[in-house]
Length: 121
Image (cartoon, rainbow, N blue to C red; front, side):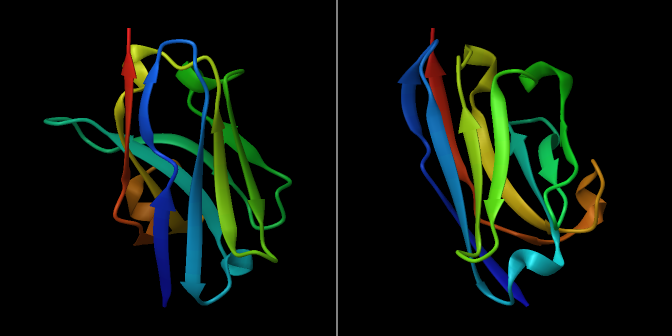
């Protein structure tokens, strides 16, 4: 069992940066591929980025490539998402997840409660 808690969200202006954190407790995250998803009201949860257990593979949705960077510190049991040059379209609740490698929500068994990111234009 892994418990995940996101933090770092907030209200920023277009072009600003934010760094999201996902802190795990229970089991170590080193056993899992970790991912970030996001969701806006009325829409399905959308894949943003994933990083495999040993950080060799990082995958991003096209809309964030070159702006977002996913990373992890297994010793600190923490996942990160560095978000630069934020756009209004990045506004969403961001969730971290632990599971198997994949871009769908069904690949992940454990989820955090989410952190709100709001980008004003």
